[in-house]
Amino acid sequence: MTLISKKETKIFCGYDCLHYLCTMKATEQTIQQIERTLKKIAQKLPETDDPALMTDIHLRVPQESGEILVFDDDDNEITRCVVEQWIDNKDEDFYEQVTEILRRELHRLEPIAGHLGILKPYSFVLEDDDHEVVGELFVADDETIILGGELMENMEEDLDSFFDNLMKE
Image (cartoon, rainbow, N blue to C red; front, side):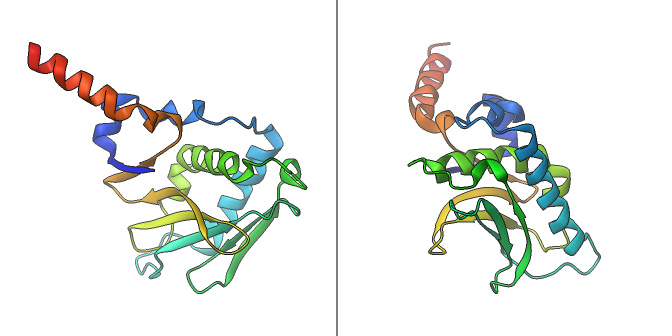
């Protein structure tokens, strides 16, 4: 996972590139359930002139229940929603797949995710059942976004090649 400025992202791929990184195909119902969850968070943390002091919004997705459980920094539950597609999912790479789906949807829904009643910067993080961070999903900050997955695999080589070509000219 790498933090990169929004301006630099436009140079490489534009904002829609995250859409193609996910290996698990999310159903339309799954997408709707994620969107509903985010809207519930926005209802409980509406944009205000006096934003809350919170650094992270913690999401947990137990494989057996398929629920998205959302907590604040003090481990108080904000909301929950069941994603039927994820119930009893036994895939070994479950969290990697869920990370990419949630990351993609949070970026798609940036007008909601990036405008909560929380003092910026704040982030959405995915945690496992042991409350260990599995991945950063989204950073609400005017200057930073998160890139991950296949996009970053060969970025160093691509940048080196780009720089070499630039220096030849």
